[in-house]
Image (tube, rainbow, N blue to C red; front, side, top):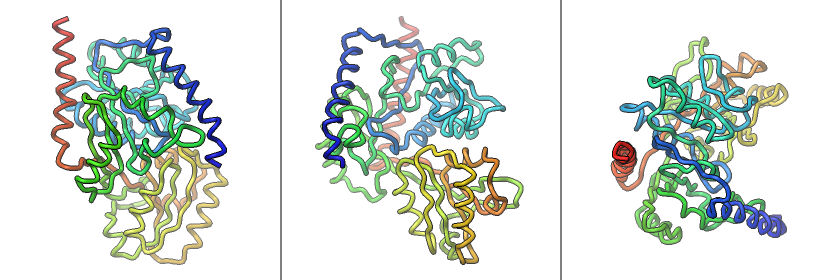
Length: 362
């Protein structure tokens, strides 16, 4: 089927190439701003780990600066500019921005499909709220904004030099357009990835001289109950294994295979309930999940979902109490291969300092 779709990929490639040329020729406008704007994005459709890497940058930068995150708010039920507050949920912000708002309530989280408008609105805030750094989530193709630093994420399991353009493949634009990035992160790598394989990937990727390449992997934390009020405690994956616990994995993400591989190491038995990325679970879906979970005969059993799925499940009004008592999410954070984390941090912090210094001089 993918081969049959190649003519459509060529047509799609012509349209994408023409659009990019309009920006290169300055026919379409591209706006820059007077604060550091760091873009985190990808070329592949979904599944590169944008949210965990954006959260990593929040932790790195928010200790000393006022940080704001601006996202499109994919699949939210609102339009235009929305600034997160205590009334927000996954429907008003989208699941990923809402996840970040709940984890980092002391920074500004906003959504706007027009990023240049969203940045302008954030910078129009009073001086005590005006951000000093703005992180753009999923903005590599949003060329109406010129970021001060562009970070491109590439999934180790879907390397762009082995892929094709949509719809025959998963690429949003040709892989050569990686040249727009300042930094490239190969994400979701195996922890045991060796230096020889890293070098081989870099050789095939052929980065430009100015582009630094890093390799990252996911570290899984403790299982956290999705719902309060049931007396549930956090669990480690080791406890799941030691207690011979059966697991129902309930997720709506673009790339579930890494999580499946992880849970198979710990679950006595693993059942799968897989849905499309950002899927909003209906009453029918949840009834089916309950039937699957109820039919699992084991005494020790639980349901594991992702953190962003938990945001949508938290807003669901159709969830059986028995499911709520068994539902946990598995948080992830980012680790760096080959002891390059300190160098990555240094480059990010230097970029922000240099931007601030150059602005003062100007």
